[in-house]
Length: 455
Image (cartoon, rainbow, N blue to C red):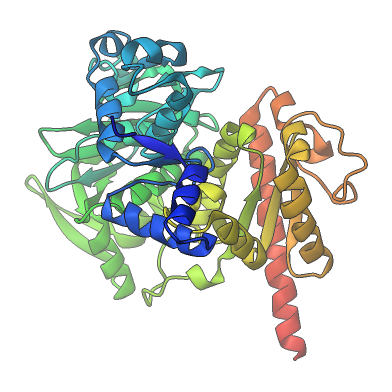
């Protein structure tokens, strides 16, 4: 019987036996085979790069077996890794390939590990359809609201969103078509309506910070929508008339054309609406296009994450907080999960590290123990820091002895270098880190302006 997969090392041996000894040419062939769907290799992802899939059906059959399993449906998508031996045919899916299959599902945003137990996963596509009682507590008239309207509601839209935002939600507050998120004292109800072909967002809590949570939600939907062939319509519900919504795009056009207000018919009434009030109600400062319509991405600083994959959950939490700076076009964050399939992962990391304006070192014992993080990324980061080419900022994630490390002389965050995991209120810790990064951005830009003025 033909093999479903081989190791990448075995693939190289086959290439050499067939007269192609050059690793670069072997990599190029692997890219072409992957693009054609003949043989799959995800060498951009450290979880997947060592396996070369010869039969793509092996991947789809394994994933669909799990998505259609009655037992997993009964558990509302909760999957114990140890159960895979029972759920999958061990002849086709031996124990040593289970992590690879789960890694693929994570890459495709079909599942995520529980934060308190990485041997348990959740597949949101199999969540219960029943909406929890907590969802009824969101009264639109008392919330900050936003909506997306689709020509057809994409299959798996909300499950994919749940995967992307899982660090902000609790298990009891997730269901197949919705989720309740928690962030800095605010809550957001994000719910799909298949009949209306729409997604509604309602944020309650402290009014002063509601837009921060909405910005994170919109950032994740922007990433999901970028894979679609169509553009969903963004709608801004009118305060006091939550059943009436105006087009976000139309509001931008009015602002760019200098229109300050416009009239809208509501029932038998004609009401005046202020363009900037509506836009400022849903946008955080600096997140919109300028009046000329020109994006400010060229002004955003490039930010690089150097971290151990064992700290991926903590990196995801930080990434969530920094989405606000990204939406304000202050940063363009990058980490190795951004590598596109088929590219040389080591070269991509090196290139992005060389281009970075800010380099975050996510410190833990695992980071210090990682040869790649410590010997390669850290060495280059410190060289660029002392050359004045980049700003290195250590972020202390977990307790570790870093007193004799190359970065020990640098100011670390959170304040007093108290590890993130030691804080009773982790939102507060991440907010302090976000503030420190924002101050670093201001300082870097001020230095650049000063240099330009001295020329």
